[in-house]
Structure formats: C-alpha cells, structure tokens
Length: 209
Ligand code: PRP
Ligand code: URA
Image (cartoon, rainbow, N blue to C red):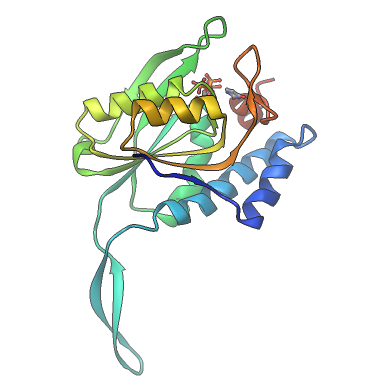
C-alpha cells in the first residue's frame, strides 16, 4: 500500500503560507516553490541506500558512508512541475531529468498528453514525479502510467498541495507509489480547483495571468 507523507515541518508550513497568499508575486512564488521542493526532497530521499567508504582526513582514516550509486530521475509534469526541479537538483545534482507534458482540458478537467521525453534507462532508475498540484489526480495517474509503461518499477510522487480526491485516486490507481505532499487541503471546487489551494500553479510560476 502507498505510504503518504504530509510534511509538518515548520519551515515548510511557513513557506507554504506565503506561497498561498494571493499577494505573493511571480518572483517570490518561484523561489518558494524551489525552496519547498528542496526541503521535501531531503525527506523523500531518506531511504537511499548507503555504502561504506574509507575517507582519509588530515587526521587519519574515517569509516564513513556515501550514497550507493543508485540512479535517480526527476520527472516534472509540464508546466508547473518545472518549478520544482531546480530545488531538487540542488540536493541530487547527478539525477537525470525527464519531461511529461500534460494539461487539464478546461471543460472536462481530463489530462491531455502533449509531450514525453524520458531518460533512455528509465527502467533502471528510481523516479520521482513532481507536480505542485494534485487535484483530481488525473494528471499524476496518467504521467505515472506512462513512466511505468517505459519500464520504471520504482516511482515516487511529490506535490506541494493535494486534495483528498486526488490523493485517494492516486493511491487507488498506483498503490505501489509513495506520495509526499507539503499539505492536504479541504476539497475541490466545481471547476476542480483545490480549496483553499493557491490558485493556478502554472500561471503563478510563469506569470501567465
Ligand atoms: C495543473 C497542475 C497539475 C494538474 C493537476 O496543471 O500543475 O498538472 O493541473 O490537476 P489534476 O490532478 O486534476 O490532473 P495544468 O493542467 O493547469 O497545466 P499547466 O501546468 O500547464 O498550467
Ligand atoms: N491545477 C492548479 O494549478 N491548481 C488547482 O487548484 C488545481 C489544478
């Protein structure tokens, strides 16, 4: 069964409150998305395996540990997922980055695919799919299905705000995928926007409204 982690760390909650504020402009919004993603990435990579190494310090040998060369891939769902990539690469600079283009049809709220480019060895990588918003769950479910169809076996999903509807749908569709959210909000409105949420994440990151 999928593990769901909702972050309660004070720094994440603080940054998220500023992010939600309608007065927060594009510049600061982008910076906050990146900072929150960085903090979440720290937790989402907690289970990376370690390997023993001997390090020669100026004082002698230290029996230490390093991350055991596990291959990682970050896959943002375009557009808004792009805002989370830099914050994660800060912590895991060797990760490869794939892209999946999906947008929600404004009439039906159903995801429409328009792009998919993944690392060639995606089947050998641990994949973290990122998108700030998990609303109905349709986009995340389709993106993860596409990634699994390319052979990936180990997939995690990270979002900033989830609605209960999307969280349940994602858990039902991909029960093997661990989910990380900075906040679980109340519900969706009649247009399938998250309440209270933060509005349209893509528009706020890219200043398109
Ligand atoms: C938003 C968001 C998710 C999706 C979530 O993208 O970034 O991808 O909606 O909704 P769902 O859970 O109901 O599928 P949007 O379709 O607005 O595209 P954009 O990122 O290009 O703005
Ligand atoms: N996509 C967004 O950007 N915001 C929502 O609240 C729902 C979907």
